[in-house]
Length: 111
Image: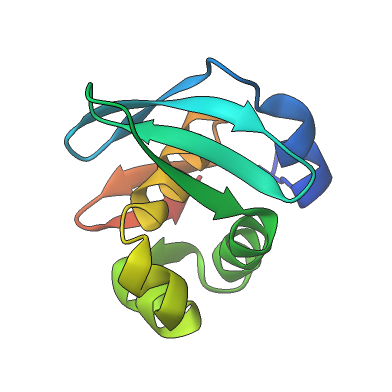
């Protein structure tokens, strides 16, 4: 069976308190809103927000090219990447938690 996901599935399957793996540890979703989700970085409580637009493009890139990497994210979302560099690994981590991708050698590969 082909592994498929869309933004509606994503929105319907994330929740406040959801933990997800990142390259260096685990993060948690703090809140889910109409336009994205907020996550905690580290134990000290630094917070960042991922917009659903970012997730939607990540899913599309995985469908078209089989993976996403930081270079793709930095190019596609240069302004967001400059102020929220952890968003890339948060998007990948949540997609991995949902069983859509697997992290390997600096990229998230579609399963």
